[in-house]
Image (cartoon, rainbow, N blue to C red; front, side, top):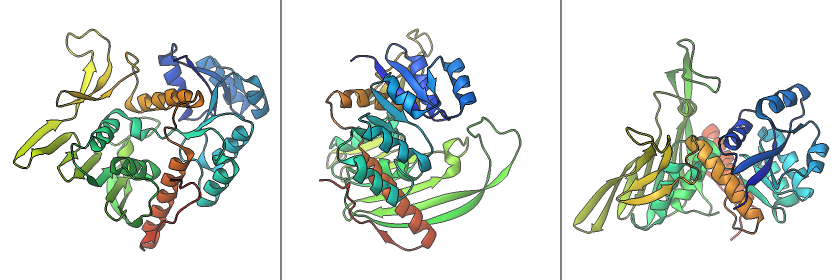
Amino acid sequence: MDKVVFGLVGGGWRAEFYLRIARELPERFTVGAMFVRNKEKAAALSRTWGVKVFTTIEEYISSGAFSFTVVSLKKDISTAYVIRLAEDGIPVLAETPPASDLAQLKELWNRVGRSAKIQIAEQYLFQPMHAARIRLAASGRLGAVSQAQVSAAHGYHGISLIRQLLGMGFEDVRIRAQNFRSPNLQGPQRSGPPSAEVPVQAVQTLATLDFGDKLGVFDFTGEQYFSWIRGNRVLVRGERGEIRDHDVSWLQAYDTPLYSKLRRIDAGHGGNLEGFYLKGIMADGEWLYKNPYGPGRLSDDELAIAESLTRMQQYIQGGPSFYSLAEGSQDQYLALLLEQAAGSGETVVSQRQPWAVE
């Protein structure tokens, strides 16, 4: 595949992930242009990353220096830019969520959802370990999967993983949820490690998503993302077996249980001189995930974003949709309902939305 040359709208913390990927793998990715309104910030980004940065959207669009645009802005302003770019015929890879509320989700879909080339940069399903679990859950080894318990990400990210692991589409769901507060010590933030011992009240959201014959369990505390002491958990259950974090058990026959582990395989350990990078995820002698971006030194999240960029390039060249606006809208819609259920204490039932295609 040709080098992926993309544009980038936004210059915040999340946008820097895309810039790092292009810097680490220059033979595969290039940021052709950026748009940032603030002139001082634009100049600083240009100096730091060596990228042409425009300060008006008109100049950015007219430059034509990219095959598609990544929109990496705050959710309350992202929708307007996605619509503007899409109506100008520019393919868009939009950061999550695609809109902040249901009204905006519907407006976005009704304006451009049926015709424009839009995908959502939902990275969690492409993170190596999650990708391995999703592949294993869909393989049939566990039998028919009926339950996924996910404590790994907030809101739409967590719901996305639940739907992927269960193999759900746009079916209606009954959601019950509650918030629970507990004391915790503040851990690292985006800015880095803590500088003092700071007590905080952590908010944990617990929810069940009842699809009828399948159940999702959502459990997340905001502190988990960077915490050194609050770990993630994933449990996937099928009629013949289950995945429990990194452990896999299943019945080869009714009287023959087998056991395996999801194992990270890295280069660069001990006497290995291939470089230092993830080679893939293996279980029972099978590669469930192979890293296509080695020997680049990328985090799991950056590997997932690189995969979204690659798939977006394939998509605009006629390849398949990989995480559509409809999928992203459904996950955000269910996240909004989960938040509503947690706030009210009442069971909330989803309704079919205009993007819920067969």
